[in-house]
Image (cartoon, rainbow, N blue to C red):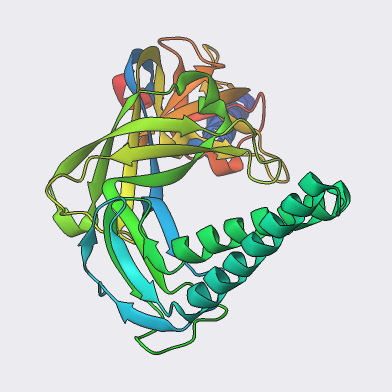
Length: 345
């Protein structure tokens, strides 16, 4: 019996060793699989993307006029007040006209001297030089009188609303405009538009304008003027948009949101959580899952943001599977586990 046991013992040891080796191999394989990064992927496809851009701006008067006097005469009477609506050519300020009377007397004296000098030349008792000098003085005085008359009754060159009054009747205006008049139909906003949109903006283009004051209501604006230069510091250019204000609901100083619509494009769209920004640069990239369960570093060019997704202008193809979760431990060519893949197998 003992002899038989001794002959069987080597076979038992070999079998035990084989089982032991097989278990260790399976455990090692299991450990390696568990060490691979677990990722979640999503297939991405092309779709129509609205090419819209939103900008913010402050409402301004279409035109602003500062009513000032070049003579410095005292204010005799103000004909309007803050909030008054005025039309182009309407008198708004009357100034003291004492200087006008003095200037008229000066002109009358110069006219008599000029006539006397001309008569002397005619009879041979004077010089043409004297006539020329007096004529120059007379013409300058007439122009000065005309300027005084124009600056005694100040008129508004535009139709609009008086928004500022810095002086009252009896004041001697200095340093500031007497009144500020703003044209409020139409109004305008000046928008700083991204350089990338420059080829798509044209004069006469309709835009949508919204105000937080009027929630749910939109107004139509029109591109009125496009400034010809681009700021090197902000990479933007200024666009003036006029807004119809027939109902007088809009006021200067209001906060406005301006929406430009440039049509549609057909591009890949990916979840925003798939996009990674390379540290120290403006490069954006994603990880694309390959057929052998490795991931590929893929640089992409972003387009418009659509809710919680981004339009991709270049870098991806329709049907690509991109990593949308678990990318923090990845590098180019890394082997990964795909969430849900084992269950499917």
